[in-house]
Every structure is written in structure tokens, then in C-alpha cells.
Amino acid sequence: MARLTRRRLLELSALSGGIPLLGGPAVASTPGTTGPRSLGPVVLEPDDPRYAELTTRGYNARFTGSPDVVHLVGSAGQVVRAVEEAARTRGRVAVRSGGHCFENFVDDPAVRVPIDVSEMTAVTYDPDRRVFAVEAGATLGRVYRTLYLGWGVTVPGAGCPTAGVGGHVAGGGYGALSRRYGLVIDHLHGVEVMVTDRSGRARLVTATRDSTGAERELWWAHTGGGGGNSGVVTRYLFRTPGATGGPAPYARSPSATRRTGRSRWTPALDASRPRAAELLDALAAELTRAAGAPHTSSTATTPRLKSVLRGVQWPGGARFKSKSTLLRRPWDDRQIGVLHDHLNRGGPEFAAAVCLTFLGGRVNDVPAEATAMPHRDCLFSVVHEAIWGEEEQTERQLAWFRGLYRELHADTGRALEDPLPPQPGRAAAPGQRTLGPLDLFRYAPSARPPG
Image (tube, rainbow, N blue to C red; front, side, top):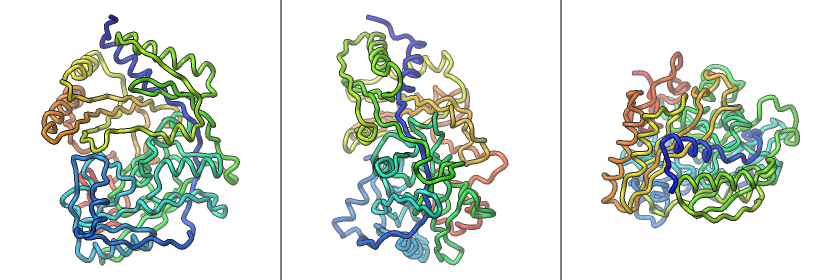
């Protein structure tokens, strides 16, 4: 049986992390008028049977909220009214889009008024502004499907089709296309966001890359700074920088993806790449040879949209802990040893992973200060995960997770729950000082206004 050495573990992790080369460009959207809506406002209290549907739809079964009321909204105007109502009682607001938040940012006992935007899903093109408008409740799958089938374009986002754009875009947004087309925010022309003044009056602001003053700062805050700081995003407006015409001149989405099926994993590669099938077979053979495990495989070429919409399936109702790290340099031998040691621990209940995703390429082309995503020089994004089923396993799994993270990053001095340090020379939450004075919109890692 071949021995999986520490160095080989790193090589194989990097190789498998670089597999996806799906395809597709990005273009933009702006606010425009939409047709009449039949939904909302829907206001649900705990005695309504629908209340449980919306308070338990979070991705992580570790957390369930118990808010005073849930607002299910169908338009920007309904968002305004919901926030003004919360402002009158000073109830803490949280916003839910796709429900893929891994922590308790929405399902927190302190959150009294969640606003669910999952019914705001329109994806349209505005020819006058030459932008694509994507409402904040749309899932990535809907966005990819509508942009590709309608105009043959895409945005370089993540591969999970049920994740919502609301949090994904505000956090920066990256995926298999990012080395070729940059981050999603590199194509973000503007954001339509609901903010409040000191009196609790809410209003919609359209902040764009071309805005000035506080509105420009508000746009900047949504280019990687995360949601939940300055207000409620109702719509994202996308236009690829430098685009001069309608949808046709924008970069095209590759039409197919080649996938190789395995018992527990499915790597994917752009089918137009020379020797795609041969490369996938070689990867599978190398990975299983090093692990000493036999394998069988089947390879097929699948239309890209179908491939993307298939998504990643997680166990229903699973509890988990997931945390990302951005690497500016490769792991050293000590860190590889830590990974090797921790991933070989655990009994039958143990399910854990460390996943690498390549960055670089066009991601590095944008100056660090141009957006609220300053990590432009990083090599990889690393996701550390532990997944379990039963509540009684929680402390044991979290102890393993924290031990891995602490030892892996011992040289940086960073603890697991440390907040990110502020970016030098810039306020952590631009726009919040003038556009979010009531501090209604916050969660654990949120930037807080001065004072």
C-alpha cells in the first residue's frame, strides 16, 4: 500500500483544489421597475405555522432563531416598511437570502426581526443603463441559469446553486471562474440598499462605482465587507468594467463541463480544455494510488448549466463548523504535519475536510484598496470543516476543529474566533457612520461605528 506522506498530501490537495475550470463571464445590473408582485408583505409571529418554516431554514442545524416576528418581503418598498417598524422598537434586524449562513448571524437570540428576502428573485437586463439587475433573494443557480439562457453570460461566483446572492456578493464572491474573470465584486457596478437615518426613517439608496462621497463609500462597503453592516441590500447591479455595448459583447460562459464520477467526490474541468478526460483520469488514479484505495470511474461531458446547478449535497439537518483562511504563502512542513495528524484522528462519527481553492489570476489584477476585499495577493482560500449529526457530539467536534485551527495557524497568533483586523487607512464599515447611525444592522463580526 502506498504511503500518503505529508508532502504528498499538500501536493494532492493543491491539485484537487485546482480542478474546477467551468466557464463564464460576468456582466451587470441596475435597479429598474419590475412587474406587479403577488407576495407580501407577510408578517409571521410564533403562533403561525409558517413561522417555523422560516426560522428553521438556516443551513446549519446548530442554530435556530426565536425572533418576535419574521418579515417575508417581496419588494424593496416592503423592506423599507419592515425596517421602519423594527426601528420604532429598536429591534435588532438580520437579513436572510439563501439561508446558507454557516454561523448564527441570523439565528441568534439577540435578533428580534429577521427580514427574509428569498422571494425577491428577479434577474433582468436594463438596456438604458447597460446593467444586469439581480434581486438579493435570487439564488446563484437562478442567476446562472437566467443570465446564461437569456444572454449567454454569467458572473464568476461559487458552485453551490442554492446559496443566495445577498451574502455571497457582499462577501466578495469567488468561484471556479475567478482566476479568469476575477471576483464577483469586480463586476459590481452598483448596489441598491435600504438605509436608515437617526430618526428611524428608511430610504433606498443606489450607490455605484461612479458615486461620490458617502454613497461611494456605501458601494465600497459592499465589495467584500460583508452584509449586515449598513442596511438591507435589495438589488445588485452588475456591469463588467470596460464593457461598451449590450449583453452580446460581454465575455461568454463556456458551454460544457467535463465531470468524472467517483464514490465520494466529483472533480470538474472545462470540456474545451485539451485532454480534459485524460487529465481527470490521471488525477483520480494518482489520488487513489497514493491513498492505497482501488477505484472505478465514469466520465461524461455535461452542459455547463446542468453541471453548475447540480451543486454540493450536504447531509440534511447536519451540524457543522466551517471557517476559511486565505493563504499568502504555502504551508510549511510543520503545518502539513498538523494537517496530516488531525485528519487521521477520529472514530466512525468523524467527518472533516480541509479544502483548497485556487485564487490568483485576475483576482490579483485589482488593487487591494479598490474594494473591501484587500486579500488580492493570496494563493489559496482554505476551508476547514467538521460535520456531525447529533447534538451530543458538538463539543467533541468543536474541540477537534479548534485544535486543528489553533495548531495550523500557531505562527500567526490568531485564535479561532478572532475578528479580522481593520484594513489600514480605511474605516472598517464605510458609509455606516452617515447611513446607518441606529446600529440596527449588525452581527458578531460586523464593523461597528465609532463611539
